[in-house]
Each structure stands twice: as structure tokens, then as C-alpha cells.
Amino acid sequence: MSEPAILAEGLHKRYGDTVAVDDISLRVERGETWGILGTNGAGKTTTVELIAGLRAPDSGSVRVLGLDPRRDRAALRQVLGVQLQHAYLHGALTVEELLGLYRSFYPDPRSTDELLELVELTKQRRTRFEKLSGGQQQRLSIALALAGRPQVVILDELTTGLDPRARRRMWAAVESLREETVILVSHAMEEVERLCDRVALIDGGRVIASGTPADLVAQSGAADLDEAFVVLTGKELEIEEESA
Ligand SMILES: Nc1ncnc2c1ncn2[C@@H]1O[C@H](COP(=O)(O)OP(=O)(O)OP(=O)(O)O)[C@@H](O)[C@H]1O
Image (cartoon, protein in one colour):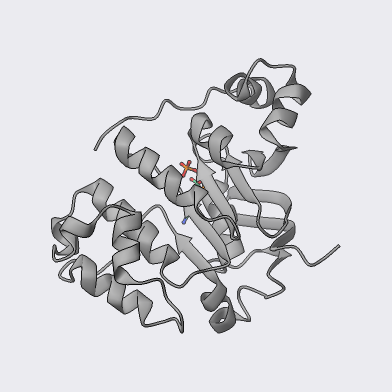
């Protein structure tokens, strides 16, 4: 089998007394879209931060396209795009300036117009980051993650806080990433069912089930993915608040 896009083996990470990631292994093939599902505090963000090299594991190993995220940082930056839950961007810069800055890091970036269209921010191109709504800031962070035509894309809470229209737009943007490998951290079953080839269900820092959405439903004897989640974790997923 060819080298996978992401190979994580035996990852552990604790913060003081809190075990955030407790022996997580994942193998993601190139071109797959994976959903990482779990309740608040399950260890999803820490897992993707370990994959992106933003944190060092206490033990275990990660390879992304064969690269070590901590040792091969410069090479990884060229092939990995990351949208994190909380983006810290310079508030005084405009949408256009931030896109220009990110595009300058890559040899063959997507055009500014393409990125603006992808996340529907064309009208806001001259708006300062600090003047954007929360949803618009989030959409910009997705455009920034895609600026360098990354082969592997990590999206943490793609659509949390977006209104239904913006949510559908972001889904279409992810669906347009056919060649790319995508990791989508999510709370939204509908999103995962629609976009993901495979799902890893994380609870208490462990992968408690993984497979296609249909596999998880079959494994758990549930009627749908929502119910499968409850059966497999014994917990309800938080109801997402809808705000613009
Ligand atoms: N920087 C940190 N310092 C201390 N504890 C942390 C830190 N980051 C996360 N944790 C703790 O580690 C555990 C896993 O957190 P993590 O953010 O990875 O979960 P999550 O599944 O992404 O949750 P959420 O859905 O709320 O974003 C939680 O108990 C959290 O409180």
C-alpha cells in the first residue's frame, strides 16, 4: 500500500493531570475526507494539533505525507493547510491583505479572487479583519487554510457558528476538494454524513470506533449516525447553537 496521507501511531498527550489524548492511532489515505467526532473535551483539537505539529506528543509518532510535523516544519507548511478554532490574525489588516500575506508563503497559491469567491467574502475584500463578523472571520480562516493549495487540509469546527446559508457554502467548498485529504473536526452529524468518507469517534482521548458513517451505524445497531454516536459513547452530542 502506498504511504498514507496521515499516519498517527500511539499518540499520548496530557496537560498537567488531564489526559487529553490517550493512545490515538489513525491512518488516513490520500484523498479521503475524515470526520473527527466527539463531545466537548474528547481530545479532538489536541489530536489535530498533534497531527499539524502545533503540539508535541508526550509519546507516539505522526507522519503527514511522510513528513515529521515537528522536524520537517518548513516542508510541511507547503503541503498542509490548517484552520483552527481560534485564529489569531492582525485585526488592522484587510481581508485582501491577509490573503495576500498568506498567498506570499506559497509558490503557486490560489488567486485572491478564487479564495474570496470560495468563502463568499468578495464584498468584504477591503474590510479590516477586526470589523468582520465572527462567521466572516471564520470563513476567512478557511480561505487562508486553502491559500497554498494544500494536499492535506485540517478544518476544526468548519461551520460552528455559521448561518445555514454560509454552512452550505462551506460544505460546497469542502466538496470541491476532491484530490485533497481532509480532516474535519465536527459536532454536526449532518455535516459529517454529507462530507466524510470515514469517521473517527473520539471519547476520553481514545478512538472508540472508526469506519464509514454506514459502518458506524451498522456496528452500533442504530438507525442513524446521531443514534450511533449515543450508543457508542453513551453521550448526547451537544446541540449546536445557530448564530450568524
Ligand atoms: N492548553 C491546555 N491546557 C490544559 N488543558 C487543556 C488544554 N487544551 C485542552 N485541554 C484539556 O484537554 C482535554 C481535551 O481537549 P480538546 O480541546 O483536545 O478537546 P476537544 O474534543 O477538541 O473539545 P471541544 O469540542 O470542546 O473543542 C480537555 O479536558 C481540555 O480541557
